[in-house]
Length: 194
Image (cartoon, rainbow, N blue to C red; front, side, top):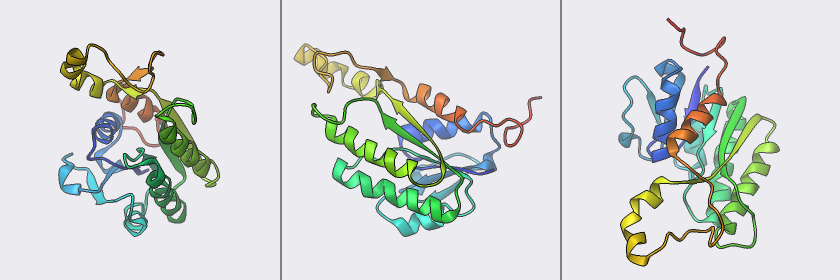
């Protein structure tokens, strides 16, 4: 079984590849990245895949059994088609299962809502694809807020899309660990336990 991870040069993509390699053989993990030269995992095949280029994904998803679609970072109006490029290429390539990193939150009523709405559309596209699917609605990554801590100190508060409400944080490593479980079938694909 081969599993492809999109956006494998990004922080979340790299964390997911690392986590999968703890359980799978290197040749079972395929890293897909817009900039393949930025992906450095010994023994892992790296394929080129830009969300804006459907033809690249037609090639990148050949002989893939399952794909993890890491949500893109472009503007919400562009993300829907970018994600559709991956979904349609996966379907045409015969991919059996797609896992998507979505987000919790309301699709209206906040400055973050356009992003949530675009992710909900991708969720619907995946559900209607005919493939098996898993959709993870994760919280916000805490790492960017930690990186901006000095700025928050200057302003005197941590401000994000939750405004005065609570924010459901997660780390990229926690998300990678839970995402890896979406593919676990020890009897068919995992490394033997010695």
